[in-house]
Length: 463
Image (cartoon, rainbow, N blue to C red; front, top):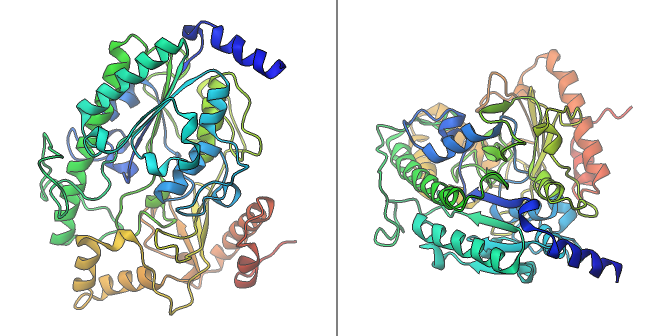
């Protein structure tokens, strides 16, 4: 009875006094594909750049797992994948609480726009309004998103509630604009990026086929930016900017080798931008604190004045917006369990800002890695070039079979090209020991099912 009274009091309160919540996501987009994060292609993401100028951008923003559905499950539960049940393309555990359910109970009008099948599909009843990919021009039509935002705002106003809108662009997920499988009639673009404009990321070789695919990818990035712009324009036109907390992220890196479905820096690093007038200072950057996918739900709940989800691993980043230090945010943990095929490829990683350590539990010298990021032109171009180029052949071999442990100095090697563990240099041994020990404690503290395998494969100094 007291709980019911609490809900009624929240619903009766003036919605304008409680913040609206807007969560904007893009699909398969690298952090450095955004102008505000260093993309050299001129005006590739003007709307995302504007959002960064209006709020606070985090330079150490990460997702927890570089696969679509489990990444979104982390956002919606505040828990690591092995703690919410969504190890891969799985449902979260039946007893796992979720963000939309908590917000619905707390008096919010919830709307889900796009990526519907990948956003906690067992909890759709918590959303008052849902628009699917087909409703949104295959998840790529800025005008359709603008209409959906207006409908969401109207629905919240009619209900007399503040809103939580999760707006998910389907770009730049495959099929890229202009690539095989893309329906140009349904998915128009206003700007086409050329192969000559592309800057090939350092973790990939510069080959014609790769440039062609990256041109299509960046064209899709620009279209995703137009969706973001359309969404933000509706919020601003409705006069809701001041009282709306906006968080913008990507679900993981680009769907190419050494990015998506891995634990490299390009896999998990995401644009992470917060706009909330009066809270997040415009044109500011946070270069110190690690923020992660587990922190999304706790942050939205804290802004709404609600308690964190029971059992959540993450915590609110709102104190950072207030200029406070969160000393515990000095590292980030990431993982992979299985891609869409459900074949297990267990990986665990820890990044402390200086070094990135990766454990590939599946790597045995014989098992070959397979995932969706190997479709398209890039992997094929690498395989073809490997026949005559020994350096590319070594990269393909590493990608196909990996090694048990990898350690990279990400300060000087952000593309993760020089595995220090293979080097006979004693100065890296203490670092490796410290990283494996920290990862072991993380796995133990969170009841990671891969702990026993990790212990059996890695030399640990746990004194």
